[in-house]
Length: 247
Image (cartoon, rainbow, N blue to C red):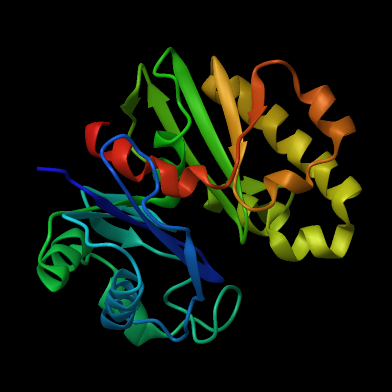
């Protein structure tokens, strides 16, 4: 029996989804919808149902979402606890609903199919890693996402986005508001600084830069990053939905 995978990439500003076959080939074009706010868990589930209704049938679902998750349980999610989206007021009632929620079980029960819920950068990484050595994935979008793999195995998630850098956090330092404020050239210098700052921490064999804003990194900045740094397409966030099951 063919097993199709519904993959949903949950961002701070938008949700994207498609269905892939066992070989990782998309069975339908990617569809999109704005991320609604405020966003309690049941509203995000309703979004999954709406997306699934527009796509071919699937026998399982992979969800990549921002924040720290362990074994499908939400430890924290920075955007979905806010009133109107990233960098707006945090609502305590949403914090209570999200923190500690076994969202993987909730998704599986609500949709009636097996579910895998990971950090969005981890799903993104599943679509691009080679499985050789230590590989780090950094995604640039609303904020900074990250995932680490060793020999193709997923390492425990580190929420680098909350780490301090230059009197700020990585999220605030390199996120979309700063890219808009600075322009791509100056923002790309910050990307280079982030990579250089993390290099001695992880001592990776290869680092992949993805997410919607990776295409904004200037050629000059990319050339200075080194041969161990690779830009990968944002489509990997969907393509990794199948391989995520074998990490």
